[in-house]
Length: 342
Image 1 (cartoon, helix red, strand yellow):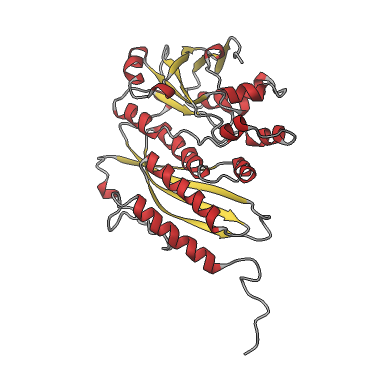
Image 2: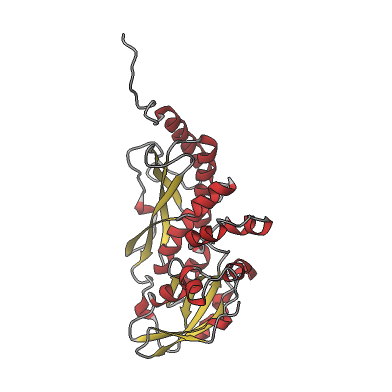
């Protein structure tokens, strides 16, 4: 028999390595989610599609809510620092934090990893991060896809995407229509940069040595707010909320308020993290900072004034919500009071 000149492996795709990785994901996720897995509610890792038993969700009028996202060029920082154990948490966070804005409990998650070549030690760290994120968010990793794409990705390059589905009772869904005049706007602290603005960060870092402070700050995983926000939803303590991601505080908070009401934000009240002060000193305008980064505010809550004391009890000291504004009647979408203090 003639020796084969062409093969999939010679083109850069190793099916055997991909199968090893799939088996690893199946084994690791089975151990991680053993308390949540049953016959029709399992990870199905390696199957063509995944099954989730919706009957176990005790909601009379369920609405399914879906969200998809990635982590942007934060993956390039992970490559530069050769640290891959937290980027998966970021991926889950960016998806589930959007989901909970509408009061939905995350049910399951799927991931997509694309790379030039599957490097098992690196991929295992990424997937462990994803599974860890799912555990924090109290949802199940039910499947995903890992693609080797030589010619599309260069050496060591990779990208991540995630998809999640959640459920909320029709009577408890959070919409901007519940926002009222004189409601209070609260800021919930972020854990750091989260997963936005990294193209600008990388531009600044091009000629900058990454010291001990930056090494720690740049890959702090995005805070997952699932437990706290869903507790508030179940207790009826919020009227609306906003996940502060791309576009920053100003663009995201207005998405959660009706057009006939104005969001008044006192920027001087924002508790700015050190990493944002460091970035501000790199010749970035206030406007650009507020549009690009969360500046220390990872989530916003809009609620009645009398509910604020009870609401705060659901957050630990590090992520205690604090007042940064209020809602009023006006034709303006947003009114910025005072300047941010760097």
